Image 1 (cartoon, rainbow, N blue to C red):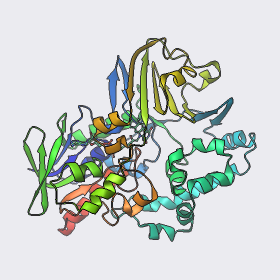
Image 2: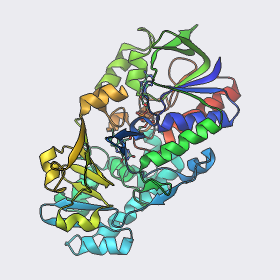
Image 3: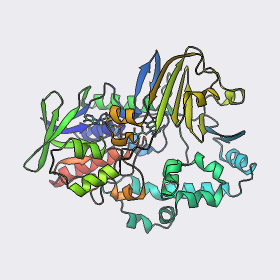
Image 4: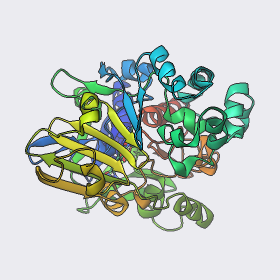
Length: 434
Ligand SMILES: Cc1cc2nc3c(=O)[nH]c(=O)nc-3n(C[C@H](O)[C@H](O)[C@H](O)COP(=O)(O)OP(=O)(O)OC[C@H]3O[C@@H](n4cnc5c(N)ncnc54)[C@H](O)[C@@H]3O)c2cc1C
């Protein structure tokens, strides 16, 4: 019998497990995938280690890393990113002044003011991120800075400062008519970095560290076997049933799988109201992200003008590309022919190619719609309405908690939902509720 079974060995599941184990609880983590890290994990393809999903890290609070005992080296390429639009290249330099001058040289007027307002956004958001009770929209509206970012759309914010051809640098088209809050969320002022450990650079380095710490804290991690049902007895979660029929009992269950999959697929019918099920299904549309990984026999040959930016994230209106050693990873709407314009030998020297479309992401990660944020990040599904208004990290079933990307504050590699959910559980345990 465990104190807590965590469903999902993604970065949020591992973070939650460490927090709980560090408080003396007996914790098991279960994932149907053969690797840990979920969408932020890594795998081997034709002799190269590649990210299965996430490659860079943005919004991970230092406080969480300290708290769970993870020390990270951060590699910031300079420029961090280059944005290609037709014949124009915009470089996102590490040095702020240089970055601003680059945009000013293209006729962009108020870039310093724009950046200042993103910095203010993050300063204001900070105090709402690590919380066991997610903030409501009303609460955030009362903050003058965050209120502005909620009332205005991403389009309003970007149009105030930038010509439309530059908007793709900051947000996906899909979110243009959603709150400007998302522009802030996706663009941390410190920028994006590659965690590194001296040998490797990639988001998986952070996940490897989380895994190491979880094992060190005595967490039992079971990979390659999925949870088929959450056991509910007397209205309370009592553990899980695995796909081989075995029963794993626990006092609490914390799922970091997507809320839709947890509440629709892993619970017997009748526990969750029909209108909530409809809401979760509506929040899981197929958005159409694609991820291409190509392993080359030779070093990737970048188009001449790009060679000097080999270490940077290459952004285009179609999506992003990162080059890591002999591999090329592209996310967005790329086809191999689009890649060939930028990486000249991508077809000629390819020795392995793996394409995951939204359907593959759905099947591999068991997330409806293949959504990289588990559920969409539109206004109806943000703040304390993520995934369902007023739930926070709890569910209507006593002892069943949610703590993945489908809870506050949302998707990306942040460790925040897992950390918060674990602390909510600990607080309930202390108060004798939950
Ligand atoms: C192609 C791609 C590129 C991305 N790029 C970036 C990036 O560069 N930077 C960034 O910050 N974010 C990026 N993301 C998003 C980011 O990876 C995710 O938002 C984040 O990893 C979600 O973490 P999580 O722990 O909440 O969920 P997940 O990583 O999805 O982990 C949940 C785990 O639950 C498991 N699970 C589900 N159902 C069951 C079951 N029935 N039984 C057992 N286990 C189950 C899944 O297998 C999974 O391992 C990217 C995602 C993708 C797919």
